Image (tube, rainbow, N blue to C red; front, top):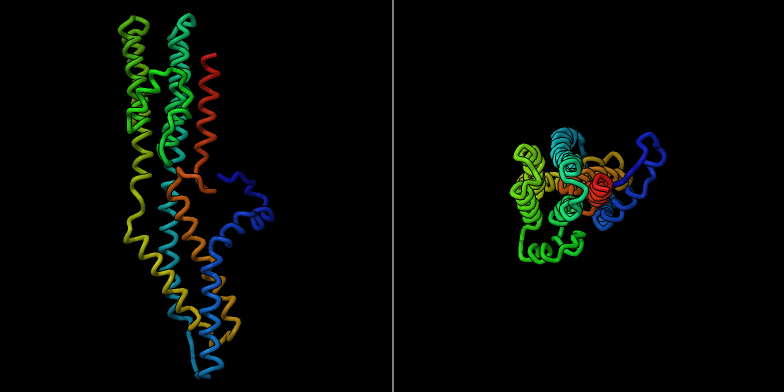
Length: 289
């Protein structure tokens, strides 16, 4: 995720992200330049048509298109912001669980303290990779070889880690190292892990409806392809930069919406899940030291 100063207007206007969007859209911009230039040449110079255009239709359609784009961006941002809230909840939940376990498990019990010191951040690392391309066990930072072997046999690693955590808590309860009341207190944070996992999977596995996304793209395409006809008789060859500018604005908005509607990847505007997992690891380790 890009970190920036919202008060620095000059820096925002000339930020490198704008160049990235231009580079992404360059093939489409070139096609639109060629298309608009050919259409203008045919009407103005080749056929010399007495063509009277009007912007009334495109003005009315522009209002409808604007409403669609606002709803599109809002829907994408809602998904992005919900993902951020879930990861903020994961950060707080990991801290709370580590704080309680640090107070409940005696310092002499180094084995169990080390176990939770590793496994709580391991859930965050596993969730981050699970929402991307898949989890690699060696990246979880778990020193117990038996647990690593157990996790390697599982398909859903974050779910398996919560199961391992529950088993260790249940064993502590059976050994008398935790009281039933303490176990119930810890159960709240354990349930929260599953809720966060389910919420993130819901966002990842439920994209914007296909028909809606398809219609928006068709609407933008039809609007921009017919746009030269609204300006040629009045602006002539100046129609080319006008159409390119409108096309760039409309498609850029759709491009940004596409990027933020999947907030758990590695795109420029995606959530900083890598930084958050490292923060969880640092905070948990500090609590147990």
